[in-house]
Image 1 (cartoon, rainbow, N blue to C red):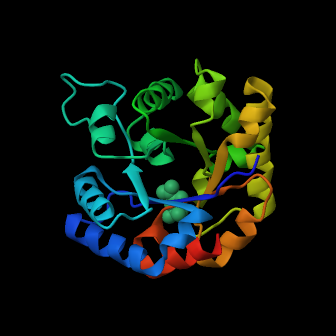
Image 2 (image 1 turned 135 degrees about the vertical axis):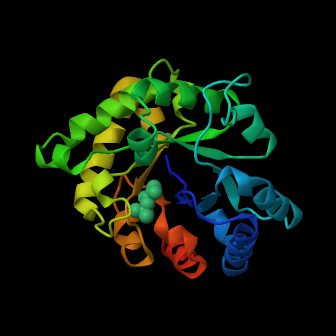
Length: 255
Ligand code: PEP
């Protein structure tokens, strides 16, 4: 099955709502609407910017999609500071990253919690971008594939095959995130291929061939073409480079 590539820009904790509007306008100006027939593009701003991005994309009827960087496993209630799936769905979010390595590291998110968040996103019609990937010491020990596919299996635990089709998986080696050290296309393809093989084993060939597997970790305009040329890489989760409108749209145009 032909998979439509996805480029998703993870803004992390950057840009206020006015800066968000300026960046989205820049992206809208640089990427003509016909571009989206070939590639899906999403921006993932902080929660505080989502309403502004929604107003802009709805008002101008842009094909640019957007989402959030996290969600609560709960729908509502006494969870101070959290933001729920129903709230994100109401704001028109198409995607939400789940289990980003920065949340695993700084917020202590476990595979079990990540799995609950994946389910919460799907329950409300939001596609989770499930982030998996190894730290440097795991790669050096030669355990990167086992580690990453275990995170994948745990993150998807309890889902039906039909639901897995709506999940996007992002392979993000932790040592490549924000470091400028991009994985080589063959290293990235090795793990993305193993992710797809694991999906095939657990959910069947049809599901495996329809799930988009992204690469993330210092993706830029100057390395994206070689990455997306790999059989099992269907786009990228882009951090730093997504904050620069010129660099991001150049990267999208090359994807
Ligand atoms: C990320 O935060 O998901 C990411 C891939 O960051 P960067 O592109 O800056 O490495």
